[in-house]
Length: 239
Ligand code: ADP
Ligand code: MG
Image (tube, rainbow, N blue to C red; front, top):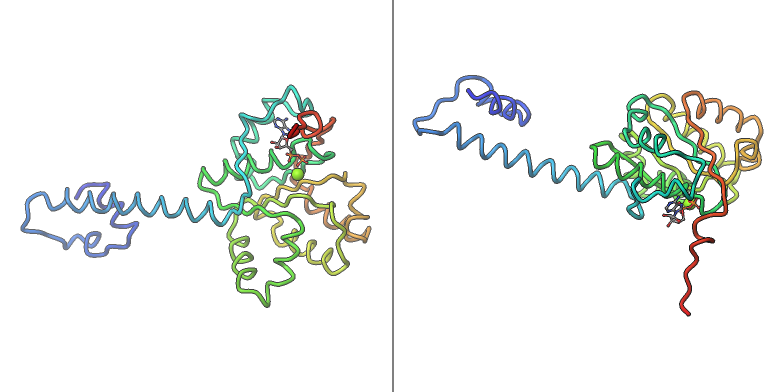
């Protein structure tokens, strides 16, 4: 039997074909079956991509090409190229993007998320605020429970805007447990307007912040973005 046919039959668990007992009185039956299985494989792959895209919850599409490294000088094109390879996701590195508003943190996080979805990784993107809501309601909301199930399957989890809104003691503990559970299994990208020295204040607990940073930064790249901010220098007006 044709090698591709055998491989597709295995993929779809078609024991009739893989068992070697299949015979047909039709001429070219293998060609026909191969065509059907190919079509099925393509359709399944399309559905899988659509599902991954939907589950990733990326709010907008950004890419690396549109990121202007003349404007944001704290990151080089070479560094962006390295990030774009996503090898660091395979190696379970974390990435923390720190900087004031408009310096391109979310843009880069989204570009990474988009690329990862395209390449077949399972991704979840969420603001810190939404993540807290999901974690708090996981026991009582079907939607939140389903989000958590997806997160547990992910290769890459992106949390945007850590430190913008104050969080409670319970939320800080939840966030710590969340990061701990992903440790060494899932790449985490975090964007924040505060450097690590401000994380004790974000979490309201210096001991918890130290323990969290210990896990997060064990295998981690920190990118400090600086500057005036894109929005300020590219302000648009109606009149
Ligand atoms: P931050 O998350 O750091 O507050 P964003 O990434 O949301 O900032 O950037 C604000 C806007 O400016 C977005 O529309 C983003 O695409 C754009 N932007 C920021 N930095 C750059 C850059 N270096 N090159 C191109 N666009 C940028
Ligand atoms: Mg942002």
